[in-house]
Amino acid sequence: MDACRALLMSLGVLSLILVPTSARDVPVKRYVVNLDSPPEEHFLPICQDPGIQELIPILKKDAKDMITSVVPAEVLPLLEVLTADLDQYLPQPFAGEMRGIANCTGIDLGQIVILNIVYDLTAFCTSIVAQDSKGTIWHGRNLDYGFGDFLRNITVLIDFQTKGQTLYTSTSYLGYVGALTGQRPNTFTITVDERDQGAWWMNALEALLNKQASLMSFLVRETLAEADSYDAAIQRLAYTPLIAPVYFIVGGANVAEGAVITRDRTSALDIWTLNPAQGRWFVLETNYDHWVEPPAHDNRRAPAMKAMNTTGQDGINASSMFQVLSVHPVLNKDTTYTAIMSAAQPQVYNTWVRWP
Image 1 (cartoon, rainbow, N blue to C red):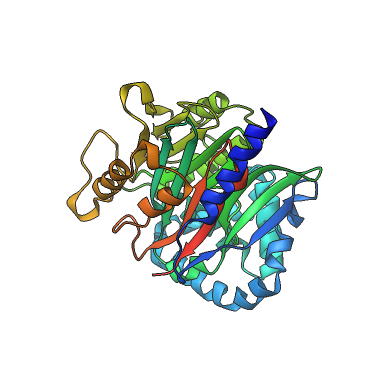
Image 2 (image 1 turned 120 degrees about the horizontal axis):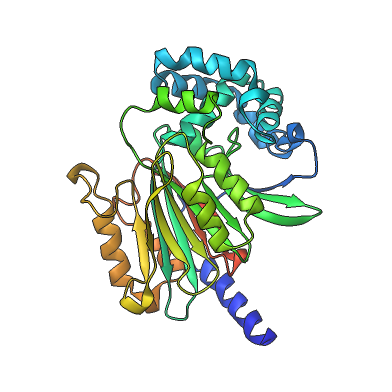
C-alpha cells in the first residue's frame, strides 16, 4: 500500500512538472506564515522581501487608483467608521494582520481595509472540480481582475503553518488577508467566484458594521483552518451568513467529493455536486448560476465545457486542467493567475501568474 501511495504521489508531481507553460506563465514565489506569531507579524516575511519592497511605491499608487475607480464615494464614510475601530468590527487575526501590513508597507490602513473588501467582491473567475477515471479529484481555477498588471506583480503562494506544519495553503495578493483560493492538505480545496447581484456596497458594509455577516474570504480562511473534513467545509460554507452573494467551489480528497455552492447572503440556494455514476464527472463555475445561460458577452462556460469534454475523464490531470484553463476566453487579458490543486495530493498545489 505504501509503495502504491508513493507511486501515486510521484505521478502527481510528474503531472505537475509536465504542465506546459510559456515564458509568460511564471510560477509564483512561495512563503511561510507562522500562525504561532502575533497577527501583526504574520505577513512580515512577505512584505519585507527585498523584491516586494521594490514594488511598494508602485503598489501605493496602484492601490489608490484601484480604490478610486471601484469604490462608490457614498460608502467612504462607512469605510472610515470601520477603519477607525477595526477590532470592533473585524475578528482576529484579520484586524491585526491588516495593521501589520499597513505598518510594514507604509500603505494607509484604511486603504488596506478597502482593498480587502474590493478583492472580496469584484473577482471574475473560472473554477473547475473534476474526478479522473481513477477517482482522483482535481481542482483548477483562473482568477480574473481588472488592474491585472498591478496584481500579477504581487501574487504569492502562502503556506500557513503552526508548530512547523502546514495547516493550509492559499494563493493570495500582498495586502490581502482573506483567501479566495486554498487547500487544507488531504482534506479539501476551495475557490471563490463572484456572484454579481447588482448594487451591493451599502448593504454589504452595513451588514459588516452590524456584525451580521462575514466577508467570504475570511470565512474561507477560517474554514481552511478549522474544518477537519470535506463535509464540515461544505456545511460551513453553505450556511454562514455573508455580506454578499458568492459561489464557493469545493473539492475533496475522496471519490465524488466536489461541489459548487451557490450562495445568497443568508444561506445556500443550490449545492451542485459531482455524480460520476451518472456521468457528471466535473462541475464548472464561471460567474453565473449554473442553471441559466451566461450572457453572450461573457460566455467562458461553453469553451471551458467543450475543452473538458474533449479532454475526457481519462485525460484529466494537472497538466490537462491547466490547458483547459488556458483556452480563450477562459484565459483572457484580465486573468491574473491559474492555480491547480488536488487535496489528496497536496504537493501538486501550484500557481502561475498569467501575463498576456
